[in-house]
Image (cartoon, rainbow, N blue to C red; front, side, top):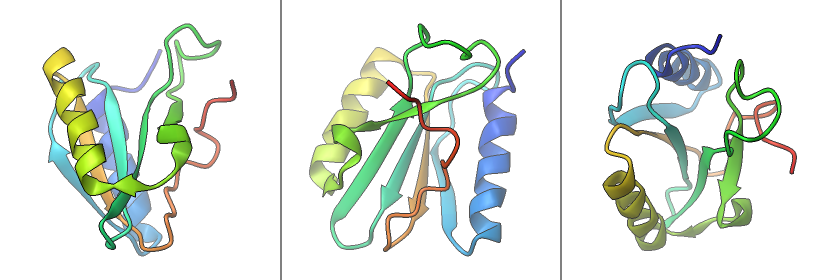
Length: 115
C-alpha cells in the first residue's frame, strides 16, 4: 500500500528542511491520492520540474517515483508555470511542492524512475 499524498509531502518538506533547503506546498491537492509535482526553483529565473512517473512502471503500487519533466533540465520559470497550469486543468487534485535550491538539489535520489 502506498503512503497517502499528504503524508509523503509532509515528510519530503521536512527532509528538505533537514538538508538546509526551504520547501513550500504551493498547491494542496487531494490528501489521499493526489499526484505530486516537485519544482526546484534555482532562484535565477529557472526551475527544474519532476512529475509522477507513469502508473504502468513496476513497483508504483507501493512506492512513488518521479520523472524529470523537460528531461530533468532547468527551464525558464514561465515555461514551468505554463506546464503546471496545463496539468492543474487536467488534474485539479494535484499537489505542487516548491524547493528553493540554487544548486538544483532535489532530494529525490532513490525516487527517480528508471525508464
